[in-house]
Length: 99
Image (cartoon, rainbow, N blue to C red; front, side, top):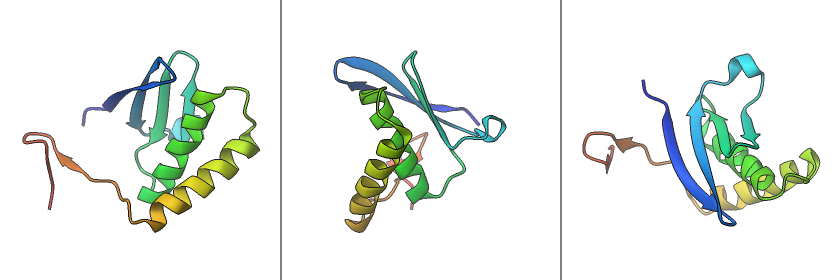
């Protein structure tokens, strides 16, 4: 299976989002200063959302504490989840949602 990489831009800076197994690193997400954000691909949908938000907060402001990022990511993830947003898996060949 190929690692999925998505490019995004935050505050004028380019970032690459990667989903991969992070078990060896003993973390569920990582934000690197070289513009890479990684999230463990084995997480539940809601935990993946919360972890991605957490790492995005680090990307936007590297001086934010873990506690601050955790509180914000939980609040945002809970609100987004309550609105019914879910991860949509795409069929790689046709780029259409799987049913």
